Length: 113
Length: 115
Image (cartoon, rainbow over all chains, first blue to last red; front, side, top):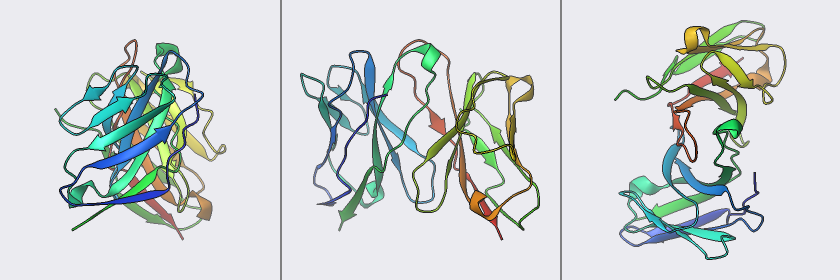
């Protein structure tokens, strides 16, 4: 699976958009970009994933560049409950590879009042 | 739909003792994974079951760890004998076994403290 690079930490004001970048310059054509987060003392939580197109769900939006070498997770209106470590993970979408996720160090997002 | 359930939520044992962690995946999920996070480190993959078969156990640290999934439903992870460095949070996750992108649903974790 391709390696990802994320900033160690970020912060944003409550109610504002949080934009979390991720670089995955070695991504291959059949690898998906996933975002998970871990709120303190809880299990990792799935947020969103995409292959080529931008994606949006009730939690966030995922913007993937045209060359797929980087992406941005957008939390449109961050709340204090969004304070967590956010993980950008790239993995193959093949049944044979399973769904094994390789977690890096992630980005620690602090939402301030 | 019930989520992934793990038991116990916290276990405190002494070095040399045995502990068994249990995971109940989401009903119908053939894939079951174990991960752990030790203090200050990243979340690390331990192993992957497809139904009752071990698909990938490359992350198991040593033979003191034994994972089972009899009948392809719930899974247990036994640590025997436990060592100090086994302390951490053990997460279980499950997913459907389908082509393409799948989503792992994680449990809340079992915190293991070895004294």
